[in-house]
Length: 185
Image (cartoon, rainbow, N blue to C red; front, side, top):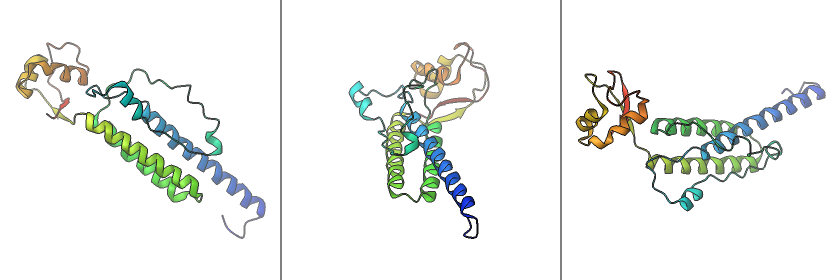
C-alpha cells in the first residue's frame, strides 16, 4: 500500500490483506488440527489416557476461527500408517508456513498463538517420531516370499508383516523385484 493511494484504495488493500491473513491462519489451524487427528503409530504401546494427553491443544483466538466447526471431518478414515518421512515432511512444511505467517503478522497475540501452535505441533510430531521406525528402500534380488525376505534382512521371519503392510503386496508369497519401503532395523 502506498501513502499516495486514495483512502478507498488503502482501505480496500487493508481489508484484502486482513482476509488473506485470516485464510492463511485458518489453513495453519486446520493443518495443525489434522495433525492431531492422525492415527497413532502402530508400534505405539501407550495406554489410552496417555494418547489423549498427546493431543495438540490449539488456542488461536481469531475472529475467522470462531465459526470453524471441528465436528465435520473429525475422523480421518482410510489413512495408511504414518511414516517417518511423512512426519518429517509435515513438520518442515508446517514450520515454514507458521514462520512465514509470523513474519507477516502485526498482532502480538496472534504471533504468540502461532508460536504456541508451532511448539505444540513440534512436540506432537517429536512424540510420534520416537514411536515410528525409520524406513529405507530395499530391492529384493529375486521374487521371494515375504517370510524369506524378513528372515534374510532382519534375521526374524516374523517381521514379514512389516514388509507386506508397508508396500501393499498382493500376495505375501510372491514379493516382486521392485523397490520396497521397509524398516531400517
